Image (cartoon, rainbow, N blue to C red; front, top):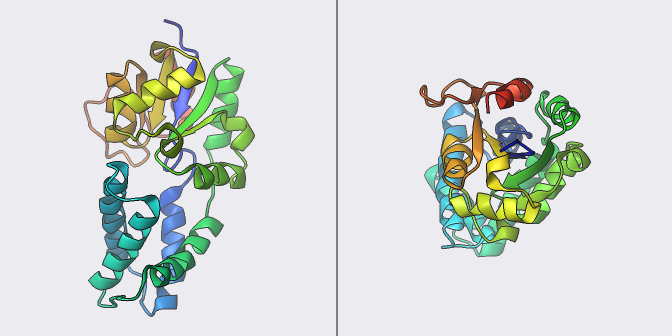
Length: 231
């Protein structure tokens, strides 16, 4: 079947999430009396992923995962917070404000979206996130109108890596899964489950650390149009 659409991930694909987090932590950690370091950056990511996994599984709310993340992080750096949830919200808001100020697109994002449009392909975004924040990201980085429809886990009630989220996004988009390519930086979230749902998939392996046996891989969105020809 002829390809008609490209379903793109957001964080790590169009928006440089890692750089935004790193910048935010570098500015936020001193405000709570801690010097930034690669070790603390890794700790923040590990704690975040643990609680986001619980959120995606439906065990906690999005707000709760933020609170759990802050509480566990502070405990791990010997600055425990035993106060009420509102105190945790206040602490997290300091990080969140700096994270939002650090949102920026990858340099290859806008040119790639334009190239896909010129090639006659429709684009949309499928993201494991909440509607308000993810649409705000696209607006802030200037890609909201160019990216196409935005499908969030919150709205769909499904989360990557469930293949059903890809099938549902295609259904709402009005395109058969076999005519759509999923593109994202997470092989486990954006590639394997998409294929299980009947989509094609291309792994955006920006740092070159993805599975060596992956046949459909690009290291930049600049290579995406050519990679789609392989399908």
